[in-house]
Every structure is written in C-alpha cells, then in structure tokens.
Length: 308
Ligand code: OXD
Image 1 (cartoon, helix red, strand yellow):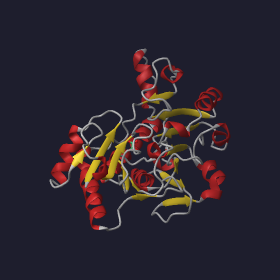
Image 2 (cartoon, helix red, strand yellow; image 1 turned 90 degrees about the vertical axis):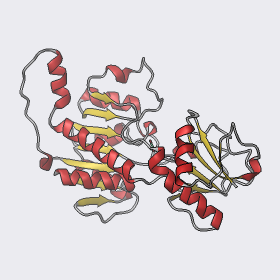
Image 3 (cartoon, rainbow, N blue to C red; image 1 turned 180 degrees about the vertical axis):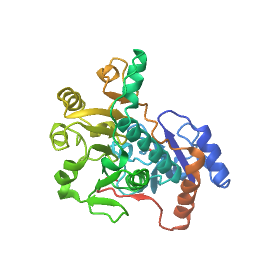
C-alpha cells in the first residue's frame, strides 16, 4: 500500500518529510516517483490537475491538504466511490481567527484610512466605532466560521451566523438557510467563510449586498468563486458597501492588471488568512491512512453530495 501526494506546485519535500515524521512506516509516492500505481490506496492532494486519479485503480480515499475541498470537485473525473477527507486543524482555525479579527478591528478603527492619510502627511482624527456597537455576520458556521465567530465575541463584537441548519453556539445568534434576509439585514461587517459549492458560487452579488445595512463592509476569506467581482465594484461605487478585504480571488495570483489593485476601498491579501502547514496536518493524514489500512472509519470526511 502507498500514499500518493499530488500538488499543483509539486512542492513535495516538506510533506514527505512531515508524513515520514508522523509515521515512518508509510510509503509515500508522487506521480513522478510512483512505480506501481496499483499499490496506491490513498491520495492526498492540493489542486491536482484534471484526471490525476484515473491511473490508480485501487484508490479508496482522497484527502485535501487544506480545509477547502472545492478543488477536489473541480475534477470531473473524481471517482465517486472513494472516501473524501479534508483537514481540520487548530492552527488553521486560530490563524483564521486572528486574521479576521485583525481585519474587523482595522475597519472599525479606520487604520486603512490613516495609512492613506499618512501618505499625504495629513493629521486628521476620524470618528471610530467600538466593537460592542458593531454586528458581524458570518456566512458559514462550519469549523472555521464557528472558531472565528467565537473569537469575535471575545473581542466584544455582536456576532451572528448563517448556515444550512441553526447552530447552538454560545453568544452567537444563528440563522438557518431560509433566514438569510434577516441575517443580512443586521450584518454591518459580513465575513464569508462558506464552502464553495454550486449553491454558493456567486452568492456575494448585488442582490445580497442590497440586503445589508448601507455602508456594510465585506470580508471574503473563503473562495474567489463566491464573489461576483463587478457587483462588488458597483456596490463600492454606490456606497452600498463601504469597503472590502479580499484574501481569495477567482484567478490567483490576482493578475497585475486587475482593477481591484487600484481600488482604494479594497484591501488585497494573497490567500494567506490561514495556510495549511505540512508539519501540523500530517499527523491527521497519517492517522487516516492507517485507519484505511485497518478498515476503520476515516476522520474529517466530506460529503460527495453536499460538496463539503
Ligand atoms: C484551504 C485554503 O482550504 O488554504 O486550506 O484555502
């Protein structure tokens, strides 16, 4: 049996090293080093090229190296009889908590405004808001959404969340699927942490923005595919949105000539909100590989039907 790694960037060394450290008995191969494709029973991937799994007839499980799994479903030849898994990691969650909290505080304390004023040597105190006066709505109350929401309540914000079904989370008001409008009507800062599926593709659009309080702020740390880019530009122009912080884009890296770069109302970061780290997530991958060998149920599984 062997564990196959497939990465779009072919950066295998840290993963091989970390997996060997987690369990030295595992045979780790890559598409470049595999000698016998029949012995591959599990693949772990980040953005594998289309059709990558076709050569491995004994594949039983495919795991994402990150929290997101949309890249798995992009492959139309993804075998439908394999177990899918993703990464659930405390470090990913705490990195996301810190990043989103920083953006929310940056927004209410006008730090971006002062950065622009500094460029003009302009001393101009501006009124600010306090966390407890601001309602943050989190789209998507999965592992990361819940972690971020809890952190934001600790900072002092009022936090609400929207997800398929209502969730019981301390100090967070939870809205279910058919309560989207009520959820949006309060969200002065909207944080997108949804999985990208056919249902959520393009959800951040003019119609949704129009249901937010005027001047709301958008933070997208999920996937570029959630956002209709022209609708954001328009909402910023009309003042329906006062600004946005985007960490993810339809095309990454964001092309040099993309209009977002020159939009003073948008903060752009290069998909660094929380990065999957080989040394912190390899233990759970090795554990799943062992479970597969012994016939136990895998952990952190993903539904083929729901797409997350
Ligand atoms: C992930 C990501 O899904 O880095 O882990 O976006």
